[in-house]
Image (cartoon, rainbow over all chains, first blue to last red; front, top):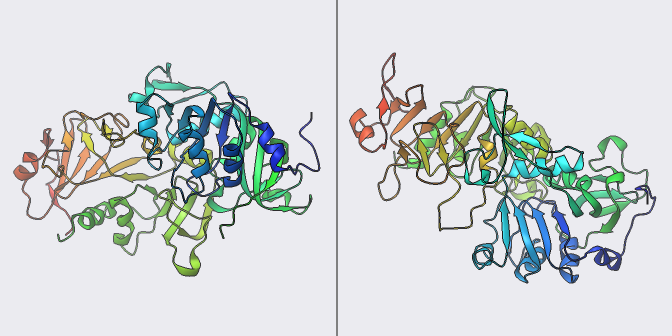
Length: 229
Length: 220
């Protein structure tokens, strides 16, 4: 199936059916900003388990937008978490120590670039970030141009859940201000991408030069249920 | 020196030059901008995706889509710019920043930095800490000279897990300003009330005197 459709608007049920056991899922957002909270709820409502979740952070504050995603972890449905910033989730340490959860800690910029490498067909990249630290364990070191680098490999996923401020029915989307964060990088990095938008507009309404996420990276569009403003 | 944190921030500010593009870590570094001289204007990056960070947003300025890396609602100055995390860390790793200013648990004379992980305390998440020190021309550590138990934080070799190796260029504390030189750490300036010997006494590695000129005095 091609990535071009003039109507990608999807129902909650259609979204929930996309969640399958064993998937690797990218979760957009930096803290509360640009986080697809409605899609987190749908993920939580699905029965999918044995998941690998990839995100910058995942707060378990019951009042916060990340709470449903953090509950998927608490319920033991996540096998591995690939994450950069852990301090906003107070449960991770006990889940990790009781071996109920594998955690891969990834420096934030390396996380972004590994996802980008997967999105854009690169076999990996060389970086000095993390070299000489605990996070270099098990990684291949490559000497080039007089420097030692870590080889970082692409981080591909089955699903990406991303958030935009506005989207049209083709999936073209605008992420205003600091909501871009991981959303624009994750959208092209998964086999199937579901985009949640605060506002959905007809095709042709968004100025082409202002598009942050091109529609060809998006498979489904849903209306956000979050009312934050 | 009523407030040590502000004293450190004022002295960090004195190291910045007009036109610098900088990234500020949480804590003492964020106090730095209050102490910039009138003729020094800097552009502040936040790694979640903005350059041109202004003061914290208040009242009607608050826009929930505009935060800094500490998740605080901020304003953005005219000429500011938003971007995604790949661009943001490209700016950082690609040496497009003049300075990164951040706190530390330990620094050693080889410029090694430990600021992300105290074993046994928390599941450590590095966030952007490892990336932030990878490319900036100056990595300025702003911290208290000793721990709350009086133990040195500036050592011959860090004992805590490292954030990065050989990256720190300058250390500003409540007792001294130190610069990394060929031989190790060089004493650039000392705080009012300190002597070279008193600073050496609370430092866990040798401190060298400048090859030329004298040890200066920090701004009060």
